[in-house]
Image (cartoon, rainbow, N blue to C red; front, side):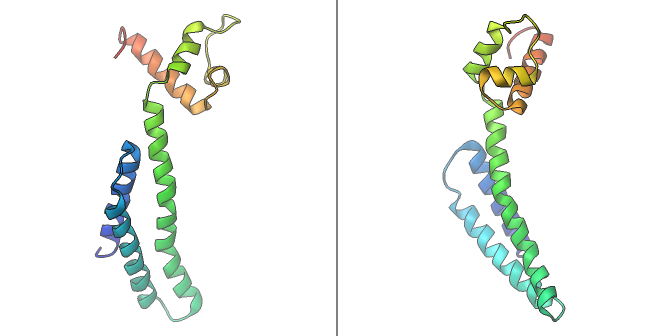
Length: 135
């Protein structure tokens, strides 16, 4: 807990700042690096004798550290999906040339965005109309 707790808090701080697009993640990185280093040292010191056991013990905190980059990217994607995009709205409001209803695939192609982004937009748009207007 002494090593992993600060590292986990540091990761949460970095992801939170990344999600908001703000600076000041240096303290989070300090906690992550120091916590990971202490975790590696403790795991290796308590591992069974042998190179393989110690390598596995060291790999676990490093794998957690590697996941941090993925978490940061996911946080940015959540913000991007939650931010209204005029191009998706404009394309959606124009309607499909063939008159059919939009699908995530067709809207993604027309608006030049990802399918998951288009699906999130369509879900929000449908929910908005069920509730009777814009939020």
